[in-house]
Image (cartoon, rainbow, N blue to C red; front, side, top):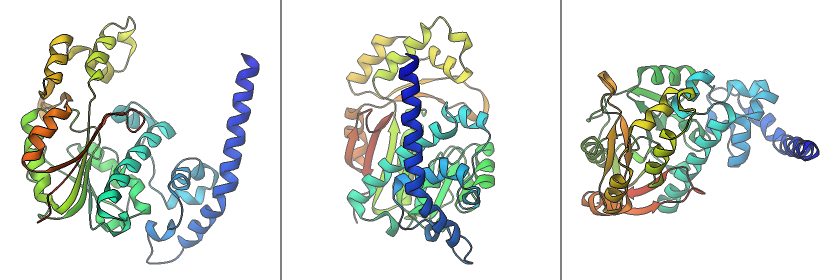
Length: 321
């Protein structure tokens, strides 16, 4: 086992060395471009591929500190984990994979992302996903909104290029109709009750241009069974508070699974008081989306594949005028 671990470390070191040799010239080009007045991230990082971009936001920043002034910074590790359960490169990798999914589905329907006239990150948290679009889209077209004042403050302090706004949890939002070609929500519809979910869908329809794309993630069916696994964990009290909260929802496992399989919107509240009283856990089956979303949007895809995303992905668009 010791030899196997040593070989694993050697392989990882070799892989990092190869990446460094491959991506460092692009890093130097970006640093040189960053000295030109009147330019922004899209100018500095144009022409690099997505994996090089991820490297620049992680290992690249540590190896070339001058990149630090050209990419969004990271908040305190405890805040990262509080929002996502992860920190450092791991949480950025998850955000990066979501960015790749969103971009791929947008481009499949509307063409190159660089032509996008506006992107809205709804529930942007501390900004781990929207930062990746800075390579592709002019910063003045990127908007992040959240109900968390702390999250918005951190976004503004770590990413000076995108626009960030604090919003009320219920619509309307302070943006004009037809402002965005792409709206995405990562792990937001995973936590909202049906009434709030439906109100937001109508608001997103207002904010999208005709033909614009809406992409949202939601909990998968197995999440209901996962909550039982959490309850049965003998070391539950040693887990973070957000993890322990999962033990209190979907206690009637068979009933929740039956509701899911019959196409019902499955939601249970965490019974939080105050501004976050709406917060809970939601699992939205494909049959519900097919039946209800089609009332106002055109459903393009529903992806239930953990190789694609850690949550299920719903892709829809506003019908062309």
